[in-house]
Length: 245
Image (cartoon, rainbow, N blue to C red; front, top):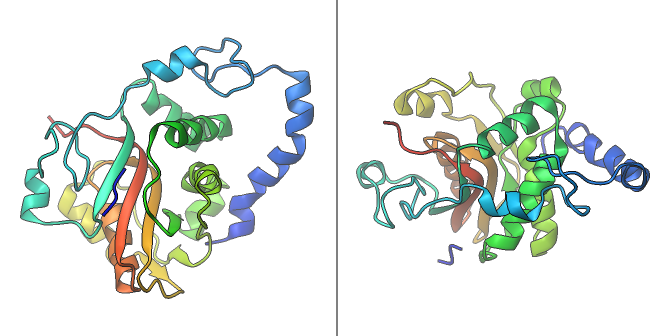
């Protein structure tokens, strides 16, 4: 083991118009860093701000929760999740937490570009066959207008030369917001939430998401992928939350 589309037209629409307007936009306005707002030389984030982002600390080799220094955490010892490993780019702390909120709720797509670029540069490409952005239910996708996991995963898949599953894996059941729910309730909330319309026999699948908290969402999705034949399921997340105090 090497660790290192639901409504596709709606999810892809922002990328289409951004790509058409990019040359004009770049000519009119020089790129500024999304963190400090200073000129960034054409990149979404300047080098000093990139270097100061809170890097993920060594954690559980299964769920990447910080603070275990590479030893399996207590939760994973009691109940192994369906996914095999997780790689996190950052700890969910300032300014990563605020940037993710800007992406999700202010539609700041430069944040997705910046995170994707840093993940590509800093994380060794894992041995995977397919990337699966964690899907949104069609009601949530209609409300938000895009899937932030897709926006993060698309440049990664392109850079690594791996296909991206945008329609074969779906969130088939709407779920209530996970924030504030206990680990046990989160698992129940996500039971039978995902579906897959293709065989994944023997494939090594990489799930992609913005934030991992308890891992309930990734656990439920990985379970679905393995039920459809995936041999190994890992996850790449922008940020991992610290364990609760």
